[in-house]
Image (tube, rainbow, N blue to C red):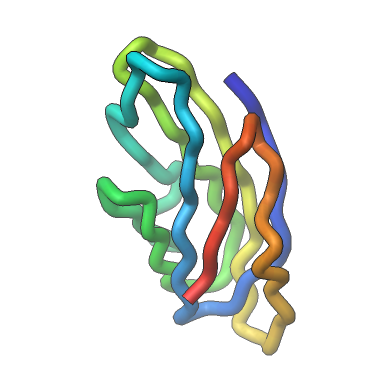
Length: 94
C-alpha cells in the first residue's frame, strides 16, 4: 500500500503508471476518482481530459492498494520523465 503525489501535467497529454508488484500478486484494476479530468485503461495509461485534480488508485488481486494524485492544467507545463518512487512504481509520459 502507498500514496504519492505528482506534478502538474498538461491537458491532452498521456502518461503510463507502472507498478512493481510482489511475486504472486497482479494488477486487478486501475481507477480514477474523476473521469471528467482523466481516464485510465487496464495497462495503466492515463488520458488527461480537462483541468482539475485526479487521484488514481491501483488495486492488486491480493487487495493491496496504492494511490497517485496529480493536477491537470490547460497551460504549458514541464513534465519530468524520471518517475516517482511509489513502492517502486514509476511513471512514463507520452
